[in-house]
Length: 285
Image (tube, rainbow, N blue to C red; front, side):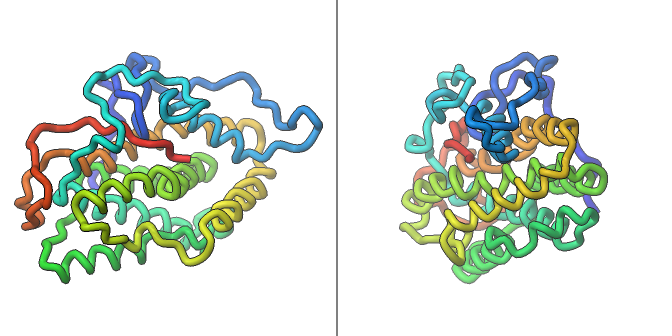
């Protein structure tokens, strides 16, 4: 049983960055609908809806992270991935939480409360089984793998609630989570595995088949499904982008929090600071 869903935090100004919101005031936190987006390119060729989804997502990045980014990193303590000081404790917690999110996404797709969801079965991008293998590997090495924490539980519960009532909004989360792992997630992996795992390559970052082809197939399916959506449906999907960033942002941040290792029994390879470190995450798309 999931606990009651927690509302996204709006009591303080969020920090910009990967899966972080721009430094807007709380009352302006939610996505502001743009003017009608052109659905055709200058030459008359039809524009796929995925291009609109990507455009909205990239604007929530900083200008350093992406050419299309419109946000500015204002907090001096924000650091690029290269300067992270990840902890093994934090990384294990991240894997447990993110597995819950993928378990939930894949369960929703398999159950297909709406016919649209069935289109996204067996894409080759599924991560639950891969993550299960990784966590088993940690257990075999003697590390205690804990239970999901608040960020993962909250987001999983929100996804389940949303998927039952609004397929367009849910598809926004589905898109952002899977494409995030294929881009920024791999950048994070290189840093973390080098620092604390002796370059051990986890299954989470392996795909059965050419990743670029799998991603293109996903784009094609998203474009095909969205052809039947009204403009209001599409706008509702785009409006959910910022929520998907906000709900998911706390999960990768766990990696570079200087937490104690009591819950895992693991001893980090690198020095562990108890000071919270703000993560400046890489591009997601």
